Image 1 (cartoon, one colour):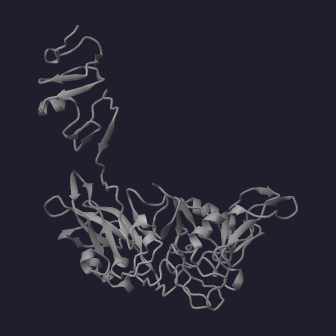
Image 2: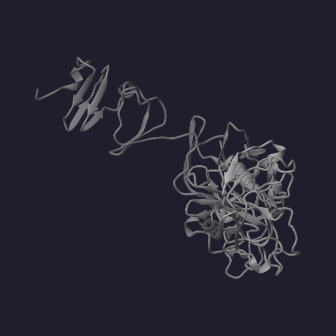
Image 3: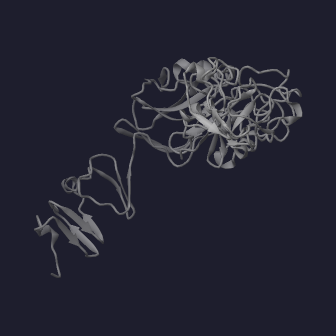
Length: 446
C-alpha cells in the first residue's frame, strides 16, 4: 500500500499499528486498542479531543526533543524515546541558591561586603505548590538583617545575635493572588512561623527550597583566611544548600560543603542520643555520659547517613584552621564552637569547620599501626556500665589482631602537635579517653 489515509482508520486489525513514513498527519481522531509506533514524526491537529485520546492530558510544550506536561495522566502502551519532563511538587532551576559568595567561585575568597555576607540570592525558577505552578521570572534576594525577609513571627532573627550558630531555612509560599511565589527565611524546619506576603504559612501552602547556617562567633581578622572579617550571624557561604541540586546525603543542618562531593560537620559531635552538629552542644567523647569509643561513633553516624573522615578528607575540611596551637586555657572545651587558640586566633577552617585542631582528637575512618599481640578479644565495652555499650547492653563479637585507629587534629593541651595534619595512629578502637571525640562527614546527594 503506497498511501495510508489515517483519517479513515478507526482500528487496524491486531494490537498495534506501525507507521514508517517520515511524517504522519491526522486532522481527525486516531484511535487504536493497542500501541502506536512511529519512526518519523506524528502530527496531531490542535484539537482538545484529539489530545485527550492520546492520554497525555494537556500538552504545554512540544518540540523536537521533549514534551512537558502540566496535568493529565499517561495511558498504558505509550513509549517515549526522547526526554519527558513533569514538573514535580517543587522544582528549582539549575542555578543554585547562593549566599555570601557565588557557589561557582568556590567560596575561598572572603567577602569584604557586609551586605553580601548576610544575603541569599534566589535565581529565577519554577516550582509547584499543590496544583499550581508558580514562576519567579527574575532573581531576587533575601537579606537576613531585614525584618521583611522573615516570616512575621520571626522578625527578631533580623538581629544577628538572635540567629548566630543557627540553621535557617528558605521557603517559597503561595501568594494570595497571581503566579509569583513569595519567599522568606525561617528558623522553623517544617514551615514558616507566621504570615508571608499576607498569607498565613502552613505545611500545605509552603515549600522548603533550601537553607544555610549562620556563623556562631566573629572570625576577626585572619590574613589569607576565606572567612576573615565575617561576623556572628553572617551566612557561612559553604553551608548554603538547596533541596533540588546541592545538598548532602545526610540532613544538611550544621554542615558545610568541602568539595569533591564531600560535606563535613561544622562542629564536633554532640548529643549522645542522636549525634548532631550544633553550636554550643555538649561534646560526645570517651568520658561523656555515656562514653563513646570508635565503634560507637561509626555505628551512630551510620544511623544518620554520616561516617568518620579519612585523613585526606580531614586535611581538606581543616585547612585554614589554627596550626601548632591549642585552645585558649589548654582545657577541655566541654561544648562546641566559637573558640580561640592560645594566640587569640579563632579556631575555624576556610570552609567554616570549628575546633578542627587543638580542641579534641577526632577519630579517623582508617586503620593505623598494628594493635596488641595477636589474640582474640571482645570488641565492645558491654561490661562497663558507664559506656554506651554497657548502658545499651551492646555485644558485638570478638576480634583477632585488630589494628589501631587514627585520630586527627590534636587535643586541648597538645600545642605544636595540633594542626590540619596532626595525626596519631596508636590507640585501640576501644580506647575511652576524654580528649577523643569525632566529626561526621557525608557524601553529596546531587
